[in-house]
Length: 357
View 1 (cartoon, rainbow, N blue to C red):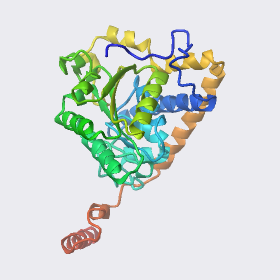
View 2: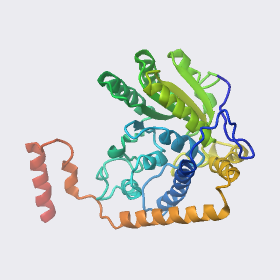
View 3: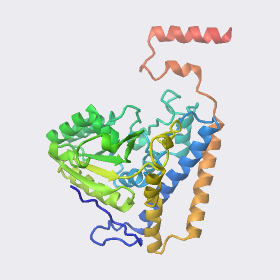
View 4: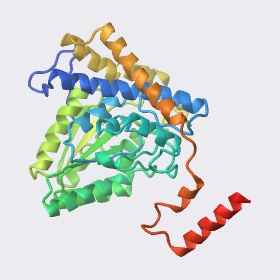
């Protein structure tokens, strides 16, 4: 359980026994989504500081552990995120402008501004809603997998969680049910070393988080969460096993949150910058870039062109989103019942009359 799967070497070469051997187009696609998430984080944090969105949870340093698992799924599989997986939503096909609309809570937001900022959902891509309640998506992922198993559907559910999520009751309930009922569920624990300001050493007395799976009767594996190919390979194998009836897997991806927990956080108050710099040397974009360079794909020109293209896409999405007005006040009364009951109709009429006066 102490072994950590790593595929990409220091020089960008790969272990041929472990390399998932992605086709070139898929290898580039993986990098593009990681880079998109990084640039999106930078831009959205900037918008938050300018007061143009209310809140943002960045994922700098965790891109490999977010994007790679999503790419290992099939289109009918389901994702149950924690609260920093915009890259996974984009992989599932969520339009960038829809994501920004939900960050803003404007009239084009499918949720009409009801959710917390940066708590997005994409039903068409089987990407469930984010929740601030730590660990709360885990039982939902297990329940959905159990329902699919009963119906005979060949789908897999993937639940993202953090190291802090392993301390919740939902984690233990979900893991136990998954083990007992052999559900087709893959748990990806993004162990970024910090649950806001609480270090992982204060979360558990276990040597690893992956070994917790053993108590529930299924496999736990540890991977280098800064190595996108390692995360992809481990998730792909776990998904194949789950789809074939082999039951759940817990993947502990050892990563690091290089930035703040959220736009409201100042990590300098509780962690040593030397620790951050040590992990920064294993930045997942830098690690994967070395792999693409080794393949003869990555050049400075390649990077500049991709950054420009992504930057323009984000700028266009922001421009379109900021052209939207706030949600109509009347939307307070919609999407609550299939048919509006009399007491809500009365309240809506009162509001309409009040606004006219």
